[in-house]
Image: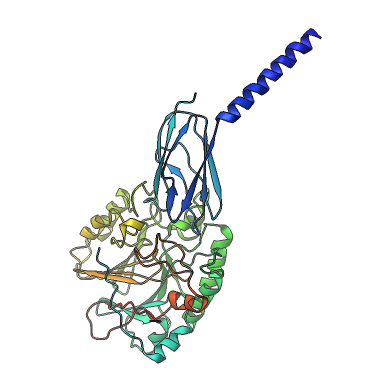
Length: 110
Length: 312
């Protein structure tokens, strides 16, 4: 009984913690339209996820300049998500059309 | 920006009708007296007296593309190859200036091969950026990269003309345009070493080797270095694709030309918010893909290419 109580409390605490982080971690969308990443610069918190969605009729990629992330070629309406865990500025481009550039600025989480 | 694409010459009514039946790129080249001339539409070749070496350029077939700008890119490639097969005087070979496929899928390469091989011509390929995006980046190389160097560049000689197939779509850098890279630039120098200045040089690569429109990435960052190496040659012809429209520029000894796509048109530089497949009315599509936009001017020493819209 006593043991059950401890387990239950632990499980509840775990649930509360999970709920709290879920509420804090955001998912930010970057649209690819007309060969442009929109918004071109995004500021997020560590732990947030950025999702790129390609709305063009031509494939694009989101490729980190420093190799931190690299999407597969995204055909029309394909998506790519990456969760940023470390603060910093992450410049990226489209490996097929390298004049397309953008950056994700990651701030320290709460 | 100066674009050398505003020479419009009104096509005759007959020519318009003739060209309406056309689809796809079909620029026929002939080299007589060491200087390549474009004979314009493949259909015109029968009328022209093509002496010496004759070859064909197709580009940007984008197998697998099925978006509104052309839901049947396979069909228009078939039409283009059908026209090529009908040429009475068989060209020596064909070059394909890249974007064979849309997404580098096995099936797309298979479809391209099945259709293009019906022309029964040797085809010399260079990759477009769409041809090297399979996960392991090996399908293009397996099929077309045998005997090539680095990312797939090579050279060969035909009838005294030196051909160089270059790759400017690999290892692209963020913020830049097309790129040849140091290794290939060194090879170009090496490859041309010892060649007589009177040797006609034909260079072909996917992205234009001159800066057509940097805002859309239509150019090659380090092409000036390659062209410097070619300065001593009397005749240099640069054939590209990528921009899905005919454009030409002459600079000193160098003639630059881009061919149309067999798949879909793209807007003229700066005329739309961005590059990309351009949807035109159905009855216009074929005029955007394979019309008499390149004309052979007899008696001219230089390659004579004229951007000739069929409508308007």
